[in-house]
Image 1 (cartoon, rainbow, N blue to C red):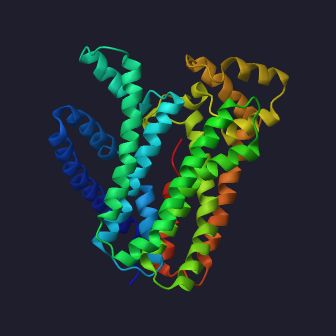
Image 2: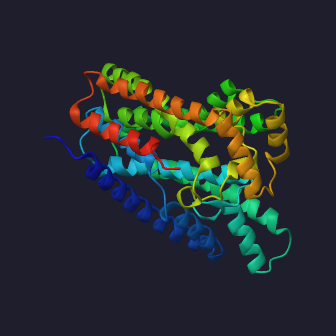
Length: 361
């Protein structure tokens, strides 16, 4: 029986949301027992996780599980749902490091608690309070990710098989985050370095490693698991890079209604993306001077945003990144022609590739 990939993914997304809702409700009660002062923190975390989100990491993990021979299982849905908490950790800390004011159309976590400090007329630094809260809540999300995964109810053997991938995914994410902040501190830009950051900071933990995670849960046969892991890398690595390149474009040209962030926010933050590295490689002296004037200006207005956007387009960097996204996506989809990928798995993974890449500017 051939499944309908859209309805299947919608069902998994709904079940992931339900598992997160139940888990966070239990954690809110627990924190409230420690102290009522913790309830606003727990509620902020619940809002951050439940009010929006594409659930891409759980969806890719579940698709990897099904493609590797797994049967539908509520415990596995709960296990893959834990990846949303890892994502929350990364986003909360990333917003703090980037100085981002918003996330998904609402104040970022550090800005939210900065406002709490102001509104409740607390003593000390509102900024310091907000930053400290974001660090602690990002750490809490990482702990909760482990807790939800370990209590998911998957078999002990499946838990042990998947722990290695789970740990590697988290190490690679943190490595990518450090590479990103290091890149921001350098005086030069490099397409190669930016591509490496895109791979580790976003691509691997969004697509490739969740697929490996699902395969490890599903398959007891080490030989079969190795084959599926290889296929998922051939599919996931180029698709993950294409996913991050799409984010690069959205960070400059994106509609705030789609991105949940102000227009051109990556330009204000001075993000050293592949898009900007390619622009620098192609820019003439006058264009470089314009970029130097506006790029990384926290008070950048729309006129400055438009000036840099025009340069990015005129240098051909925007078109080149779009072409690279298409090339990487086609490379990824080629991996799905392997005999080990049946029709249902092909349909699920192809639909997920479309969701990941065809996000509108």
